[in-house]
Length: 357
Ligand SMILES: *Cc1c(COP(=O)(O)O)cnc(C)c1O
Image (cartoon, rainbow, N blue to C red; front, side, top):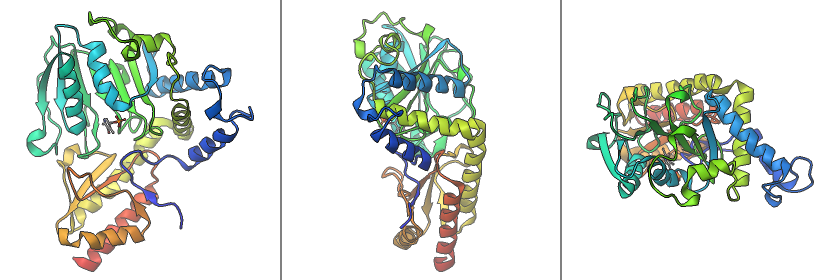
C-alpha cells in the first residue's frame, strides 16, 4: 500500500524529500561518517545548522538584526509561561484574546505570573469565530493572540493594529502565508504542525523588548540567556532543528511563502467549496474566519459517519477524525500536503453523497 494522504493535525505531514534527507543524516551527516545524533552540538558542522536555521527564519520573515531567533525545548506550551515571565512587568498587565484551547492555556499561565486581562473571547460559541473590533488597552505590556486555532479551524485573516507589543502563537500556520513580521514583538511556534518535527519550538523576539520586567529570571526560562548562548545555552534539540532547517529549505527552494500561500489557498478553496456544495456536510465555523490550515466539518447525518469512515479509509486517507471538542472531521492541510491529496478527499465526499444522499 502506498503512503496515505496525510491530513494529521499534528505532528503533521513533512515533505517526502525532507524525510529522506533526515534519515540519511541519521547514518552519515555532512559526509562525516557519523550520525547527526552522535556528534557534539558544538562541532562546526552542527553550528552551521543552527546558524543557517536562524538566518532562514529571518529571511522568510523578512526581518533584520533587531530580532533574534531561538530554538527551544518544551513545546509551544512552555512559551505560554515564558512569554509572560519575560515580558509582563512586576506590576503590569498583559492583554489576551481567547480564541480556543491553546489561547486558554496561555492565559492560564499568564495569570499565575501576573495581571492578565482577557479583552475578547469567542468562548460563547465554542470558539467558532474570531472576535473583532475590540479595544486594545494602551497601558498593557503586550497583546497575545493566536493566529490559527488548530482545534476549531478558525484563522485570523487580519491581525489587529496594536499600539502595544504584539505577541503571537503561530504554531499551526507559520510560513503558510505572507505576514508583516515586523509588526510583531514576539512570534513563537511549536515546529510539529507546519515547519518540522516535534521537539523544538521557534521563538523570534525583538531584542529591545527584553529585560524590563523587574523580575529575576531562572536561566533556562530567560530569553536573554538563550540569546547570549546562541540558542545553545544548553544542548538544543539537535535533530528537530535539523529537520526544521531541511523543511524551511524545501519551502525556500520551491518559491518561499508567496509560493506556498497560493497553493494553500487552492487547497482550502477546493475543500471548502465541496463542504458548502455537498448536501451531506457543513462547516463548523463562521465562513469569513475559516482556517486555510485546518478545515472542520460535520455530516448532517451522523448515523452515516461509519459509512463515510469506511470510504475515506478505502481511499487511503489518514488523520481526518475531528478533535474531541468539535467532533466530526478535521482535514489539516499543512504546507507539505499536496493539492492532489485534497482532491482525493473531495472525490470521496462526492462519492459519499452519491451513495447516501
Ligand atoms: C499544538 C499547538 C500548541 C501546543 O504545542 P506543544 O508543542 O504541544 O506544546 C500551541 N498552540 C497552538 C496554536 C497549537 O496548534
